[in-house]
Amino acid sequence: MKNTMYALFAILFLLVGCKQNPEKLTSKTEITQQAERILFIVSNAHFYGDSDIAASNHFSEIVQAYEVFKKKGYSIDFVSPQGGAIPIGYISTSDPLQKKYIYDNEFMDDLETTKKPTEIVASDYKAVYYGGGGAAMFGVAENEAIQKIVMELYEQHNGIVSAICHGTAGIVNLKTQYGSYLFTGKKVNGFPDIFENKDAEYYKTFPFSIQETINKRGGDFQFSEKGWDGFYQVDGRLITGQDPSAAATVAEKVIETLQQS
Image (tube, rainbow, N blue to C red; front, top):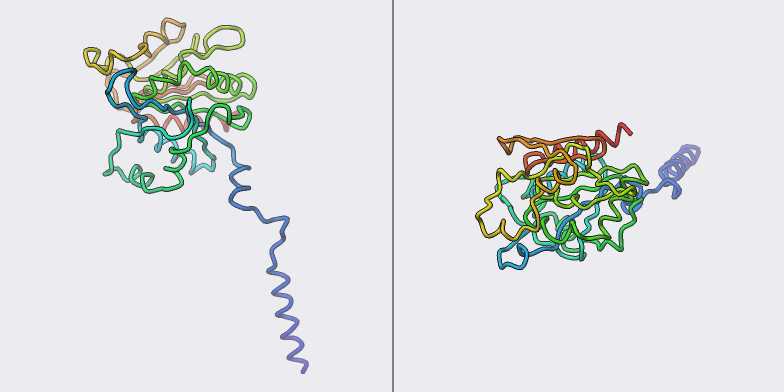
């Protein structure tokens, strides 16, 4: 009888001891809400300007940065001028990382349901990342709602502005509260004119040259003549990369800068 009582007491102790404390439970949703957030800015443009030439966001430039941020515990939202689905391209199914995300339903759903600017609260984010691809040349730079989000994040919340390749087009109209361009006097990188085919029909649709506009508005556009060598620039809280080879590094530099602040 005595042994039986001991056994019952042991079982009761285990049941009570293993019972989870509701106050310490953290759901996946709560973890996501608590995580520091990065805002990816992408384009809805399906064509180069008014042409019938298909345009898209650069898939590799998105997933490389996304992977870096995710591994460090950051949560990511996508915003586009119109919200909803965005076109993606430059896809290589032989690339393991791209293949991983092509078959990631949650990730692909995010690209199909990007947020509208009106759904974004700037103070929720630590940094923005402008993705590249031909589509990045259209719809983003002139969107005043996105400009407002980015500049509020940068000026009021000590946030970081980053961009990759043609994504740098998105920053050309960003102005501080004092009327100067965000990049004035800063080193900036992006896809340089030297690698554009200016005689091609796609280029003729571009509303501006990234390189020329940055320089004309007081920035110091830097680039690698070699290309596809991971070239990037960090100037304070402005971090920019030249092409897909620098996408992961840009994300890493964003994280390093956040950790130093």
